[in-house]
Image 1 (tube, chains in turn red, brown):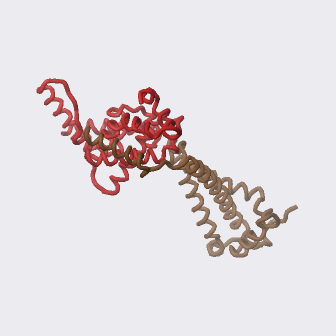
Image 2 (image 1 turned 120 degrees about the horizontal axis):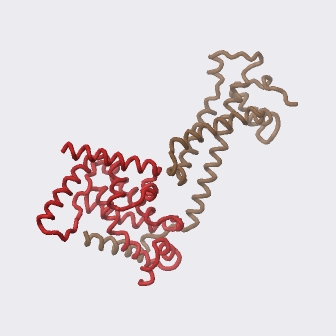
Image 3 (image 1 turned 45 degrees about the horizontal axis):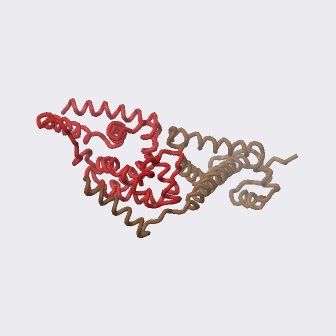
Length: 180
Length: 161
């Protein structure tokens, strides 16, 4: 496993489909926390987020031979989880509150933690009011630290549209936060 | 959250070990790509051909070259239009499967695709392909039947040299 951990995601994907299924555990290990945070944000619920991520990992494994190893594995698996989350959202046809129940670690003192929590609550409150088509690229860019190109691959929209949506999301968020 | 994460890993890996989930073979994806490509080519060819037929039947309207509105409506090949639109829609749906469709503005791609098909159909009819097909070639019978059913008069077609 130590050798496996030195490989890139794309190389591990190749190992899983040609030699060793067990290597898929490394893929899960690398992505579960990130995907859990992303799915929980879309679903607005940790448990539903966990279901989405589990189903996402299963779909990724089943379709692993369809993955083009010349492309970024990260964008591919985020895309699968995005689709899975959207399917569930459509199925339950419910509003999806954002960034609820997400753990934020802090080494600061209690006062600072309280201030931080208050800020986070304000940001959450603003984000909750932004339509998901704007808030999702914003989340991928700032929270998941994805590039515009990766967001374009995940959401399957042109890079120009990614830039426009992030810019609009910031404007909407500023307006909402100032109103509040 | 960490407990849930551990559960995800264990659950997925146990399903893999127990063979409850299996990878789809590479052939499945290769066949999928080939069928998508063939479907796209087929839809382009069919919709172009059908659009050229629409122009052909509107062009070949009568010995005197006159056209009344009711004649146009009654003779217009509606089924051809319907199938042309269906093949066009199939083509648009298949284009969506390709990566370039979201790298660029999808609306622009659709507009260019539709215009290209209509223009190609118009060119094909203008250069006389339909006239040739109605007189010779493997689909001569079909073209004759089309003209008969669509109310297109054969004697209105220009003679080939």
